Image (cartoon, rainbow, N blue to C red; front, side, top):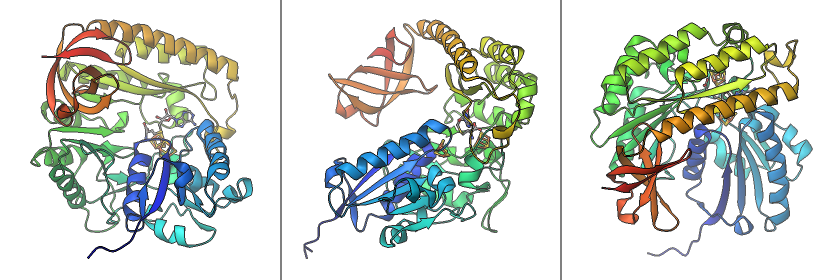
Length: 436
Ligand code: SAH
Ligand code: SF4
Ligand code: F3S
């Protein structure tokens, strides 16, 4: 029986973090009966943008992108705005972009089919509970699978809009997580990437009795016992919840990749307090040095905000001091950006943009110097690399256990496999090497 049925085309652009990437996969899976994806916007029947709101710039990007969609779309094609900016703008999106057909907030992804069918549909309920929703299966990569372990965030850091776009924190019951991982490994994924805004706070609250009270360390341990799981990564853990039990499980479990994200935000205890981060400079340094002692191969990445309201030169020096002491392998640094609905937006002593800009430049150049020293020490080293990406000119790329990007000459048959690579030409962005 060959039904003469050709699917409609879906174009989807994903901005923001890994959670949005996973939400887009869920959207594609939910629409799979009727739509298949295309990367040609002009042939799409449905154009979606999955937005980020964490800083002001990605919000501007939303409106410039949808303006572009409107110009190139084919007649009758629909445009939907999804994700975190959809959550906080709601129907205001229509005011700035009247040609948009629907607005679907983060945490409302399960309503995508209704949204597509209903004119001017808006759903941005941050209390909507998708923690046990059985989404369809779709994976962008066959090699690495993102798996949500919680939704929302309870931390309410004073600069951050995420709790207003993704609502309160709920953990996903462990049986759902373990099943999802089994499906991913049955499809060939060797690497599992766990997602949540505060992954090491896992297990604090579930929406129903299906949730059993286990903590993140126990969850990691259970996942590491699943057949086929060779590598486990996760993001983001919170420095406040990096207790000894967690650091021990992280260090001793060979399946857990030795790359830790420790989002510092600021090195000044006074600023951390104003940010409501819940830890001090000393606690952060103590956790980082304990981690390096337990786990000498670990690489540590971080997020830093400069120019938070009230940040003095001395506060910024504290951030520089943590940079010197921890010598992060990777730093994601941002100028503070005022976000609606956040307490920091109305704090006195907002910092002049030029001062914040100068601090950011200083931080980034010092980090680059440190990173140059770190990568130079990699020459001659041999790493197990899990290859995931075919690049131009016969090159293939993948990551080391401790999350360095490595590229070497190689071909397709290495995708989804591990190989040993000796580093020959280390660079800041990528370590070049030879398969041995
Ligand atoms: N839950 C994660 C953060 C997710 S948001 C955590 O706590 O680490 C990703 C990063 O964006 C944050 O770590 C922070 O550094 C940055 N960020 C969030 N709000 C911001 C703002 N208003 N201005 C600048 N950067 C911000
Ligand atoms: Fe935002 Fe803080 Fe939650 Fe991270 S922990 S998402 S920075 S409120
Ligand atoms: Fe992620 Fe941006 Fe939302 S960082 S949680 S997509 S605001």
